[in-house]
Length: 517
Ligand code: HEM
Image 1 (spheres, rainbow, N blue to C red):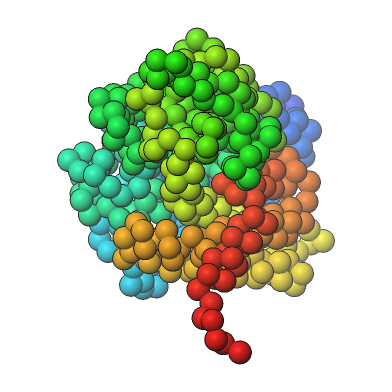
Image 2: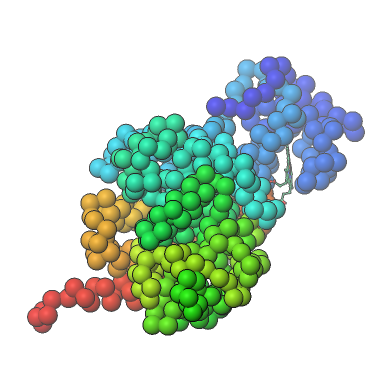
């Protein structure tokens, strides 16, 4: 599809006359723009527009702007040049990108994959359309403004089953309408899960990506899997969260303990009548905490760790923490001051909360790998587009061998990690939960560790390709700037790179045969 412009046509000679004080016209990709009333409003200033008045400004324009600028300011177009057609494609809602390597191979028509069936492809199409229409515009707006996700979007995601799908495969999907039947909840597997996760990265707003119910993805799991002691509570919380009425988060890390969860210092002491716990302590870096109603909290209970579901109530205070990504993520410092929690709110067994916490880790780390790897691809796509459109030293960037070297490295890192991710995902579809815990903890830890190392390399190369724009939050380099500023979140959250590397090798050590040498 091309830009929608008025039917009128002009000759190039007619356009050339409009370079006067009162009238400034120019041509971009065969479309004629009258910017006479836009001169004052142009963010790049009036002088630059006057310099190209009456001429074909296509090269100059694309050297400085993203194509989407022309969609936003479509009213400035007054017609096309007689006998000419637009050549630049305007992406439409739901479209796949035609740029090489911009989509994973399984979505590239010429390539085949053993892993994906029709329901995966249907879900991918439906998810992309849904995100393009509803999620991405809000993501871009909220990433910039720092406001939290809007209730209308949360409810729309709830009605479409998008919130449910974010929790991965399971009974919670049975009988739920998922994007108007794009996939049946019973056949939803980890490849569907991967699709939801990877499609969600495309607006390139790392803060909003977490602000968009990341707390639910890691917090509600504990209620679904370990809330059996109190079925009424489990049902109420699950219904509240899936309907979008209430929000939930996972509160484990503290100023005292990050990846080292055994060092937690928030205490839960039973009252004399044995009916309540009294919780005291603090939690730090809690995603979505500021706007959450429910907190899944790691506490010490004397002989070990336990996990409690705590409702926002007297003694619970939350305040935002400023981080290097957008405040829209709702990163929070929480204090619990003599908070009274019914014993029925215990998730799993007392003093055995470590199993509740650990049970979350593999899926969380796998999700983070899906997202990081998809974000890397977005950076590759943007960089390929930019390298073809940016002219420096009288050549396109792509014509410089040094730029092609950088792109080659970026593409290779991206493709190799996606392939590894798909291999592990396939194992997940074939293994029971205990088998996954036994055999995949190590590989998933190594995948996440390696993906974030690759992200580090890609961010570094991409900023070198983009120059100042890779450090500028608005305009052409927006995606690169966001990636470079935020990729570190994934190398810390859910287990730091070094901790995961060590875990991966220690898991392998467990399987070493005794007599190898
Ligand atoms: C219909 C035509 C145009 C529109 C709607 C437009 C709009 C914009 C917008 C929205 C920006 C802010 C940065 C961004 O979002 O990318 C911008 C920046 C700029 N524009 Fe334009 N522009 C147009 C044509 C041109 C042309 C033809 C030139 C020069 C030949 C030009 C030169 C610039 C410059 C130098 C900047 C600053 C870029 C930077 O900070 O990196 N613009 N323009």
